[in-house]
Length: 235
Image (cartoon, one colour):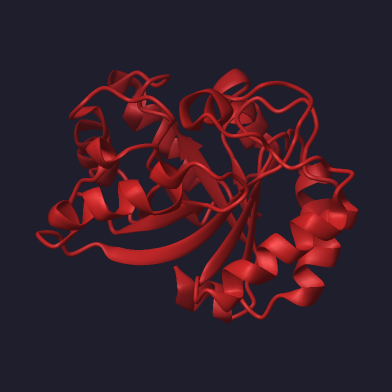
């Protein structure tokens, strides 16, 4: 994953939440992913049943060669069936469980896997509605008006040695991360930038890329309207 970003390719990840996805639909859904410009598949959610992630990842791997990356809301979502894991530190919040606590808890599981572990600074940005991330982590997002705070938080992630920064508006966001924020964060970083939440059209996707996103994550738009894949088919 990191190698692709370092090649300065523009990447697209389809996010699949095991709690919102029927495993029996995997073959048909992944066929559409394979026919699109998607380069990665992210799997995870804020609240997921134990073993649901492993079951879904195992099924996904039957139908695609795309890298499958864990985007975990909890340590129970770790599975060796995937290719890598975003080791997320919720640096926009101040809940110690999501800054370091869950990470320590995860080590015993990660030591027995072959997963590529990718330290990621995770920044939740206000999006116009309360998100599941807010409720589960008991943290508040940074207001989109506090651009300097978002930019400084992203740079702090780099200074801490994180390999990626993830600007997240949240699942089902009313408002995507403002393009000016993406642009300013990208300008200060020397590490790749992921942007997700509230992106519901090909135009919005291209705008995020132009502002500086190296990888865009789309989840709810596909969950609500799989026809969106039609607009993102490979040429």
